[in-house]
Length: 113
Length: 113
Image (tube, rainbow over all chains, first blue to last red; front, side, top):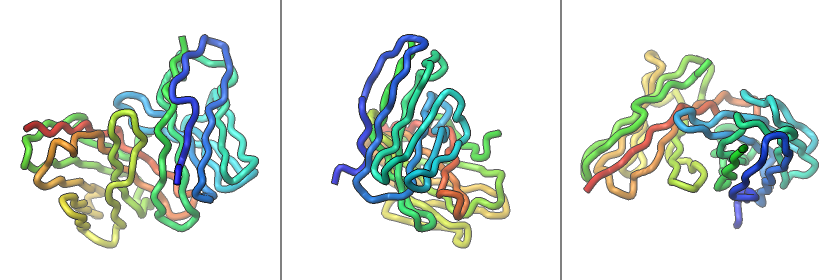
């Protein structure tokens, strides 16, 4: 199984540009998450979804948007890229039972210049 | 407000030694405490987890010690090996609520020969 797949792996954007980070999972998980990881800061939750058509804000949602039209896909959209959004972005998924482990993709490294 | 505090930020241990990483939490409603291991260029992966109704959980060389009254938990890596060199994150979550995780800031472990 592929698990959680993120694309692209690397991307450089100019300030003000927009882009979509793709995330897809093949484990039929209802719960999906987007995190950003900054040095010394751990992982911060941006948005999450408990099922198709349902999304909610996490700890650091400003500047981002998400959609969940299918169980498999959970794209993250940056509309107006800012230098503060330079980070490594991780997508994760898990089952609906309590205390299920989150399965992470290998991340997208994004630089805003 | 950081709800899970992790220390130390970095740790160097000799091969065969014991690595100890500590975490403290604030929210007494947390009921699940996993540890994730992350290698460079990869996403975090679940290493071991504990619920607050037990004080210790051991899986191979990895042990979680949990002190509910002190709101602290720690990861012990016995007989540390160079292959254990990675970044370790503690985390906490609430039952329900989408299985969201609150992460600590991470500890970079290096095991030297």
